Length: 399
Image 1 (cartoon, rainbow, N blue to C red):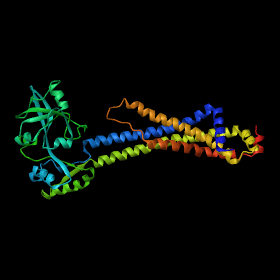
Image 2: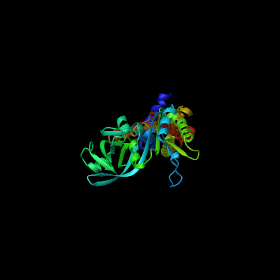
Image 3: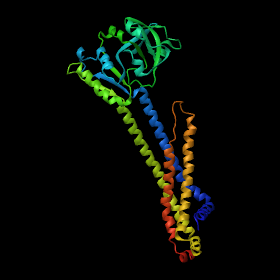
Image 4: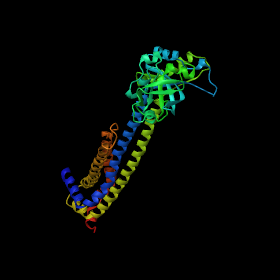
């Protein structure tokens, strides 16, 4: 008997018990669909989290003075405008640098006072923090140099203070100074108040902060590198530069988003492994189901096997027949499961935000198919071997 006839006999046997074959393959369908969906969800969540972090600035560093107590440190410890210029000129891998200083303040508009976070910024801040200006404009070099009393307000503050009116060109008072609003901004990716930008924030030129603080000291020094690979070297160089320009007792911390990115990737990998193990358990259960059904099938078809052996069927032909039946059940279930696993992400894509894509990994499709078929062959071997080992005389006498 050639392989084509063996396959034909196996398929005819499955057709004779369609419902049993469908129910047996149900576990494989669920398992293979789970593998595709698990990998798809893991990839989607990983890309989303990493893209959110990278949108803040994956090649971003920021340095701050270590403040060990509530006592104000000496002015010689503070980060200065000179440090900012030294970073720009002394670190070749740095493409942009900016400094900020924050101060709690109250904005007064039309007699109404609103608490805000006042942020004095130097040039380059918009590029580093990737602020979106959707009304008005950002500061230019003239605004910075001439200490123009201009400000930008956050989108949330604009709605809270001015409602539906256009705030550009309106005046707001903060302390003894009155500023003209020249723009409304928001973060490209929200940091949920974990950065200096809060819901109610006002940005002014850093040159005007001395009116409020009395000093030109920077609270935070932001640095952006040209390439992601330069972050580690610039982190070391920035710390060394600050320590070399200040007293030995002063301490500085340099932070990056690399650690957060690494943690996000590790968490995503861990979740992917756990979910794949769960999907593998589903396939294991389905494999055991295939083995049980095939063992029952062998028992039911003992007389048929005896007749085939009596008319000359070889042992390997009997084994191949039952292995083909297992492969058809697992392979067919794998194909259906993969189609379901692909159809679900494609269907829900239209209901997701436009910037969120749900990629279906070709590798997950291949893995799901190979693992499902391998499960069918592995668990189908024992019934196939048992069927091939039956003696013709005993099989013919079986009722």
